Image (cartoon, rainbow, N blue to C red):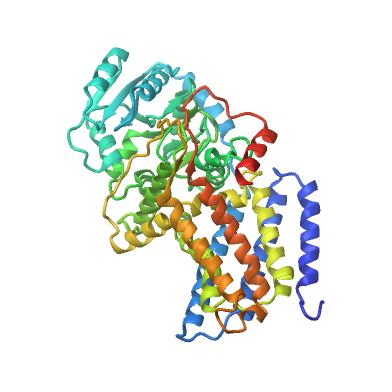
Length: 556
């Protein structure tokens, strides 16, 4: 065995050692986390080297060679991004002690900064907005004013604002979408600090005390807090996993943002943040270059020498997107906005004021969305094999067991451990696969026409009492599955006269076929929209056993 597969002993010992370390190590210990990250990076680098040296043909312009090398290119980009995330996760920050110190200083000041709380709105229903307004009014801070920014020309909202005793600002033309709405308000307000809260979020009473003081740190411009949801997201909801795993944004909010914050590269993501008015004035207001005004504004501030901090405390709560169509549109918008940030005048390619570290962190979300192309290629690879006889790479079943399988196991275990159990591999992939064609379209459309501004507001308050099948999302996934299965059956029943069934890569492709069909099955299930009842008082804490039972019933 060792002669046939020289890496088998090293891989087995590494798996055994990491399993022991996984059970005994303390997740908070920084050196332990660094050691584990290094070990997983070594595993990934060994794998990529094996893939390049042992599984690829000499490049030529044949269809097989182009497919294999393109597949490897995107797989390598995915592995490099994963290596990057391993190191980002090593030392997440905890700014609570700093917030305590700055809050004490702030409470001791005789004159406190004026704060304007801005609630940008467009098409939200009254029952949602009234809760957001009341929560903003109830913030415990002596010197603030609440403003409702109406982009929908709604007289009833003007009357509601008047009844609640808050400010109301309407603009007639929706230019530059949310960023334009905020910038229009900046011309009419005068507070030293601007707080932005989305219309579906509710600030906690101590929000301003915990955040405003931190802006006194030199060169500090913006304090971002996590997005905490009081309901399940679309994938959780439709697969019955409300209590079996965390919602899609949890990994980013709880782990990635604190990890980025260690390197002064946390970024604003839309709601529940405070920012200095003077810093906004310095960069000309909220960025209007892309549909991701939050990400673009963050890096414009960083380029001007300002700091963006992440305070990982639950200081607000909101509604996650439960409708699967809205979920996909939201992700597609994020994809488009992120790709626009890459190419915009203040983006990573053209902004001369960003450091190398800033540029690397800026590239992180860009590469994440480009990774959608790798996911699509992975889903299509079995169909390509069965119909065209072209595998994604050369290997045999033995290497599947001693190289590929250990690598997948180790990487899965490592990311799960470093993310404090917030990342469930299969579930995280489903969230991308459901809208894979929309995401890939967003990547290509932005590269071809970067600054075509298309913005769709995410509707989170929709209620429905019936189950709905979204065929427009499901049929492409079913199409890939059917293409894969019919290709396999055509080979198996002898309609294609060749030796594919006897090739050394047959075992690999059978395994990959089963895996991709399972992903497509789960993703298709997620396209079946379960009834939705928006209840802001429902707790997300419940029985894991009950939720897993519900999921099992839907799957089988």
